[in-house]
Image (cartoon, rainbow over all chains, first blue to last red; front, side):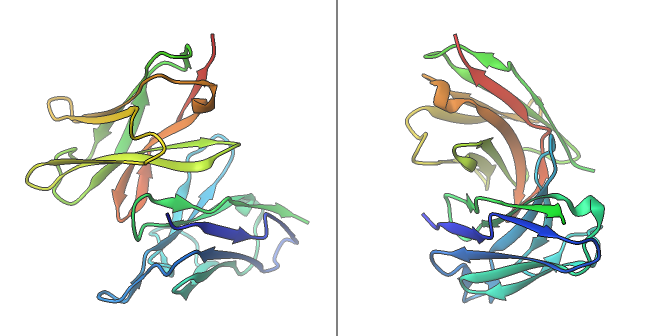
Length: 113
Length: 119
């Protein structure tokens, strides 16, 4: 199984400041034939299911604000929120869909400082 | 627009069977491009993928090793839905269960069902 490890576990950032969440996979999720990273980022608010923000490591889902961006390749990935808004308080997860069993990171709880 | 509506009991006794259904609107369980999944979430296990069903000229199922001996995911084409059955449950199966559509990543999710295993 591919193990996904996020850092940090929790993060407090001031409104308007940048938030950065890291995700590391135990093996590469880059498909050489398509040159795509099979990595997604989700946002989960209390009482709601996860919502996809980013897929293919860096493609923003329709309707997601452009302050959210994803980067990285192979085994190391980053989710960046360029200017934190109050509504961004949530838990964020990375997930690999390179191979089953699909696996998620343990989550990063993002709060306002 | 795609919607997934979950139904099923929120309380199951130990050793009994957990059964949930996910009704699909705006898409087809028989789609040749989409895949239909069950995922659960608990404080101890986090988000855990359980398995999936999909149609590619014939039906396929795939299950997580952790539940493989106890799980069945079935499509119901007449009702455009799919179901989860987990037999011989224990308190460790207590979790919020989600159905989700996979188009590589999970782009649509059901609302979630908290299932508690307790006598």
